[in-house]
Amino acid sequence: MQYADIIFPRGGDNHVAIDLIVQHIRTKLGQHNLCKIYPNLYVIHSTFQICGMHTLIRDAKTTKHDFVFYSDRLIRLVVEHSLGHLPFTEKQVTTPTGVDFCKRVCGVSVI
Image (tube, one colour):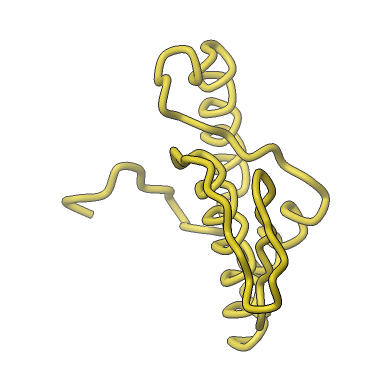
């Protein structure tokens, strides 16, 4: 308790207090365009898939296997999005079969 930022009386069962804090945070975040304040901040827009995965990893009844699977998937989305912001230079690549690739890069995620 000494180092906690927020303490909820009755913990996770206090839905009213949790909802108030969540609404307060959403209000504060909505007051500013954080991308203008922090030019290196990139926001991954929420989709039904991302919301569903967040719901699953936050559910206390989710199995360890599902938690790891969906956490890994969310992490992969963040890494893929981040890689898109790295600086690059164009380079022509010749494959062993003699095919030339330039200006287009294809990434494949193998599980």
